[in-house]
Image 1 (cartoon, rainbow, N blue to C red):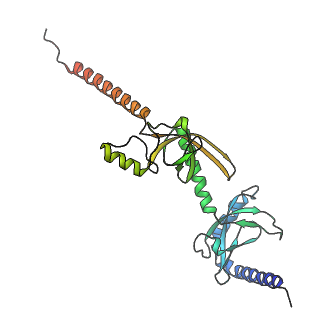
Image 2 (image 1 turned 90 degrees about the horizontal axis):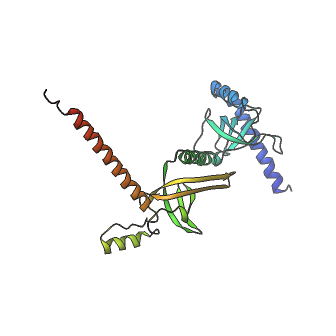
Image 3 (image 1 turned 90 degrees about the vertical axis):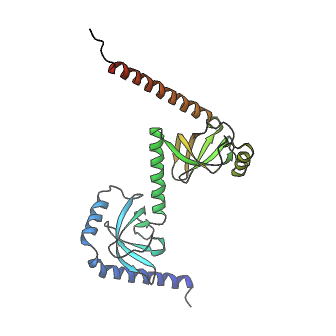
Length: 259
């Protein structure tokens, strides 16, 4: 009697062989121009290991839950349908990252699971870098107190707000405490409320691979005493500028005295 592992490995090999046979007969139906474009795009990469390449689906086997794709490099790739984002059809372009040029079986090893989420994280990180460089205000939420400051959630990334960079007049408060204070005093609480969407400025960003990313911010903006003083100074400056302009316009428009 054959061991179960041997039977399963033979069955898996037959499934892959059958899928590749389907790929061979269905490749002619796929878009020739798309395959050629993918081949040219991947050929431009000097070393594709660790890079994201485009592949073209040439066969879909729903019964066995796999799809075959042309990589445009040297061999076809086999994907599990469960790892792909949504339904795919012959001719669709799927992006994948090259894990190994040669795996233990001597084949091209690709991964597609979580690639879209990783791309979204990279896009968010680039936007935060742009905000840091330009000094723009980003929106975030105060989460909770941590050692030496507060945790702030910004676009799905946890940032650190040091106590020395905290710009609120009073420590953050909860929603319940803010409602109770507003009911008792009849005024809006001066303390920022935990969970509210507030403005912050990014002071520093560091990263080490995909596992460690750190952001240091200052804020919240718009509620601290420093921001109120700055806003008052700006209004006073604008008022003086407007007064000077109005005075100059009045002098210019005054009628000349008769000789």
